[in-house]
Image (tube, rainbow over all chains, first blue to last red; front, side, top):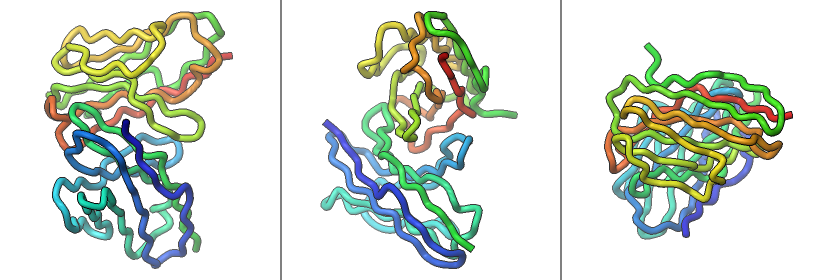
Length: 108
Length: 114
């Protein structure tokens, strides 16, 4: 089987740093992705890690540890527009398996 | 130019009806998907097609029938709609049969069955 776990909700203030964790159990693992989804919108791609380590893209960074089956998304200098749901997803063969999502609320 | 487009955006229909959702991608991708997002926002794979061939069918009732006339299109037909089918349905595509590293999603179709 396959499963991913994420915290259901995270709250932070503007300008802060927040980390959203993801643990996974799956076979045939290729890599870990992160997606952002605003209310009423479609999921949009943020980052992908195939190898262990940190990938940085502007204010967002993503980390993967394959040995620990663990990854996280780090959001820096939070802005109000970052309020959204964030999903980790495992790339498994010809399929993306999504975690349950973390609702991030950014407060002024 | 919209990369992955699906129509309609909203669909309200009565129980027992049959409806279709269309999806087209202009990215030249080989793989297309249908996902269902329920009220708790959980995204669940329904089908995966690669070059018009069904790759994944995840325990979806056979009232749901995908059709891929060519690799740029993956339509979803639903027979005998039930209340529990109410959800947002997303079409997506990715680069190659290994899924690429990024899935591109359509805007979603909010289906409400009354």
